[in-house]
Image 1 (cartoon, rainbow, N blue to C red):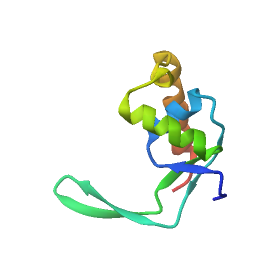
Image 2 (image 1 turned 135 degrees about the horizontal axis):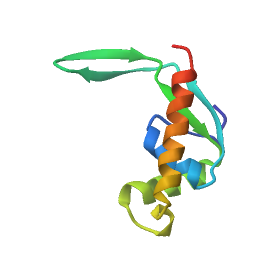
Image 3 (image 1 turned 30 degrees about the vertical axis):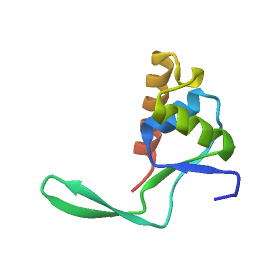
Image 4 (image 1 turned 120 degrees about the horizontal axis):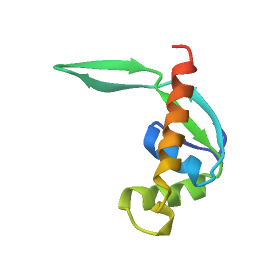
Amino acid sequence: MKNNEYATKDLHFAGFLKIQKVKLVKIERLDESFPTSSWNKIEHRKNPLYFIFTDSEKCKELEKAFWDGEGDSVMVNIKDYIMSVRELRSRIFAIKK
């Protein structure tokens, strides 16, 4: 990953970034593992998928607005947002495991 790139694992935030006109560079697996819960046991999934975007500074500003729910940038067309998330989800399923 390059210095000016921004990575997130969050599908819905990635969809938000896309409709904010931040360029999606790629979707890739990075070398790391993290714990996830699966019903009543903890599993470890290796190499989760990340959405890699350009302009890390803009992404950080949008991240704050997205999670705080403040500012004009979080006001989006819900149909565009849903379509963006659906497109990303389709791309995820197209990637081989």
